[in-house]
Image: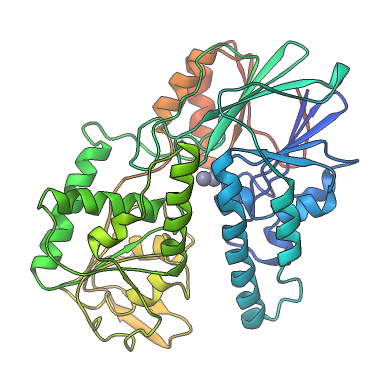
Length: 452
Ligand SMILES: [Zn+2]
Ligand SMILES: [Zn+2]
């Protein structure tokens, strides 16, 4: 078999992998780079020669899904195999990204935008084919036959990893994986049986695992911090990804409220995240691949945040919890706008609950000490940071030690690293060489095939 990483760089970026089993061509994911726009944000799809036989969509985060309409437009005969819940989410998320690209076009004048249209999304929607979890599915024929089996990956609603067997050779793709249970999804249910090749994500390869720090200790710390700010009359901004993380946080707040441990204050959420609550609720009933009930919104009395923001620098009209996207405080998103009313208020706080790329406004804010300044470009406003800014570690990705243990259990001859920044890949490479001395570890150069 031959694997070519089609991501544009050795980073998380636009995930996409071409996997060739003899003449049979399979593409795993086709994401869009969150920090680039236009053609620059796409994977290197032009390196695919000939037609793709099967496409696999592991989950609906945009770094895996965002370019899928283009891949399907270029390879209209390929089916897109995915989990049944992903077939319910993909269209809604892609319609939102058309809106984002249309807005970017107005702001930047970039003529390449939007990169696809509603009819491209429609075509992808028709190509989506739900494959049952833990149930082998054969694709291809004769010497090309590949047996695929999907396994839930934790991480986010609908996410799965999968094994592919071709002519007796076994390969396992983790996709984005989380082994610990969250509220909307359980931990990954991956088989721990030997394979020949393991393709493994390594998002947290450069993140030191702190002893005694767990999801539950971080949640306790977060809840105390929220209550302290609310009791003092301030507002809490929780920037959260609209898909997955926002629903996780709603369930977290609801459980605390049920136990009588959440200070009484209004909770505001924004558009896409609220909409996705309906989609997750629906998928929860139809597929049993996740757990979420939209009634949590009524339980908590969630108020839809209208886009009538206060003037930058002024306090929010109503103190409360603002659980709004984006998770990385990307410019012009609701979280970024609310931050303009929070940052210079010593009574208020910004609590990050997910990963922030250092190059995003969220990453920049985390790196700026109290008393420093934060510029809101486009609002003509610079805030002096007087509020609390804190990170809570509630990642949806496996710890590096868990990944090493997983690799040990699968004892592959070859490991291909993916979905990680250079320091994460470097740590994994070294740690894997120690843990599995007989295994070859590949950190693929983008666009260059590896024969396995
Ligand atoms: Zn993901
Ligand atoms: Zn990802």
